[in-house]
Image (cartoon, rainbow, N blue to C red; front, side, top):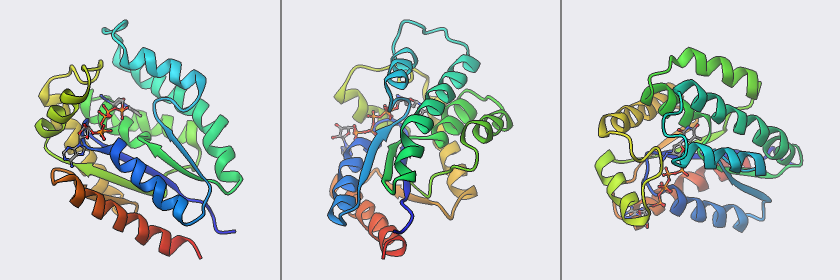
Length: 211
Ligand code: Z5A
């Protein structure tokens, strides 16, 4: 059995992650590989409750440190209850956002020192890191406009434009630092073009990592 892959999809709001996750799921199933599709924050009953607290509007004044710790609390549960057991059984994992989102939003966006996030990452995850990360990159205004057409804003989507600019630039720095595992995709193009490049990236990866 080849080792299963842990694939994550990242990007600012409205980048098209949800749309692309569906495509990736089909591709992995077409190779007859078992797959867990999940998301962060969330992925477990406790994690989904924490997601409600993080994205809802009942705690709008939450401290940045509280937000950071709740993200990692949800992640600890997710890793222990779902991600690690799946990988141990040879099941591939496809996750809508993971720790790169914490670096981008709580680190670059909220300006919490990245070293603090790195300490939590090592503590909660041990050596576990994604094997492949697709970053759907696009101008912040385009993403927010797309997300705005789809649903009313969550607690994050009410942030100022400058916050999302820092998040976007943060993601691009992460991609440059971890160039081996990142594929950056220009998500400002029509969906057909974005989908084509996502398919190509996943096929390349599957060709290299499955027999
Ligand atoms: N967060 C955090 O701060 N720290 C962390 O550690 C983690 C998360 C893990 C929830 O994430 C929030 O949690 C998120 C970061 C924070 N902040 N916010 N908000 P989420 O992933 O659940 O929520 P989201 O980023 O808001 O995702 P989204 O709005 O669902 O966006 P999306 O999945 O990337 O987009 P989509 O739903 O696929 O597409 C949006 C619309 O655009 C839809 O109508 C599509 O049909 C359309 N679309 C998609 N692609 C195209 C193209 N190429 N052209 C035209 N139209 C398109």
